[in-house]
Length: 178
Image (cartoon, rainbow, N blue to C red; front, side, top):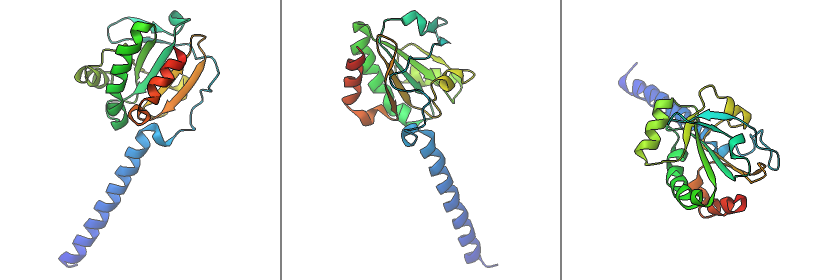
């Protein structure tokens, strides 16, 4: 086998590896899985509790009558990274008006997710879904997914993907639940 043949074989392997990586990364963000949720708009928001990074326990039941925005995220997900500034802005604007926010780390490690939030200055109540039970309850299979829950604790909307792509519509959906 001459060096040209070896180069072609290696080039083919590299191209195949790049294609596989691209497919895996594309499936990592939930923008491509817009119909995969078990949660149904109009249905009651499932009840759960989550231990937050500050040691407190956040429960859906404790926020009865409050509008809630829940975002499932991961530090490794580019779409979660791009969504963080929008979540930070929304929290600063709407939390003083009574809208509760919760960030749920998934498909990551708790320490990486916590560091991800700290590095981006995201001071929103957050915890890590250790056993995947909360994401399973909400039918979330890839980050980011944002669930908008109204005052009657009904799911008003569900958005799969990068909040940055929503633009100002994101704030409009928060207004709907407010």
